[in-house]
Image 1: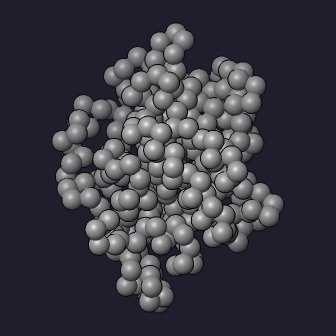
Image 2: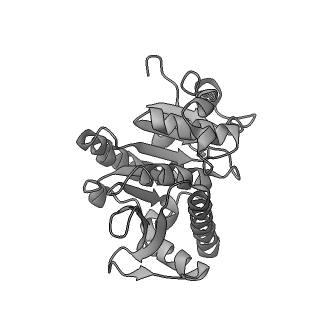
Image 3: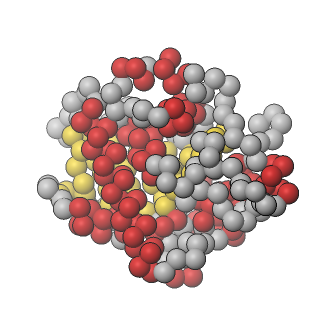
Amino acid sequence: MLALSNGSARPKAGASSTQSKGFAPFAAPGAFAAAEEIGMKDEGWAPKRAYEKAGLVAVRRNRTTALLWARQCRKSTELAVIAFDELSRGPHRSVIAASASLLVGSELVGKSVSTVEQAAVVVREASALRAALAASLAASQTALRLVAANRETSAEYRGLKAEDFAELYRAGRLELRLYHDRSAYSRLQVIAPNPATARGWTGTVLRDEAGFTPAALEAELQEAVEPIIDADPSFRLVWASNLPADDSHPFFVQSLHRAGR
């Protein structure tokens, strides 16, 4: 497991002793410098900011990665770029994007937000995903085609409006297909994190807002998804979140640096 912070996600003054002593931003040796050496110079769609490049490098080099991101630092955009990187490798690749923002009812995101505020978060996530994938596709040097579909009915959409895209995202029915030719595609599915269904996921898994699921649920999710990468050495597990309030939360504990890890 590699844990990576973009630096400004450090605990504020007055944080608990566990946070202040246990957390420090770090990355794999040379992760920032390596951003140029792995071919990003030739990838027009790659992220431009140093910490975003480092995040993509970290995911490419490590099978499990925790991204501890500061607020308003394009976390959802970073995950979308990571998704495009995986999908563009070739047809028949699969990415599962499971965001805690889609949790409802008794499993509501562990933030003090109203229903209206949560809806706004979901719309922002959907907008960031759509914009980042569209920008990556436009800048790609490979002939690819991106199509939105309904995960449940498999119906494909042309000219999908932003509000309809966001509604599919909110309902957990969004599937994005990246066509490599007329019939072969890789796919990104957007769903709510659920331990019962997580055991059946196949592909690279992106967990957005992992620090804001209830702690018990997050522990179950981690246990459920970790065996996924055993099925294929090319699969990746990526947890991403802002700093949670509880420094005993499984995501925060997961992001702490440990000797030999």
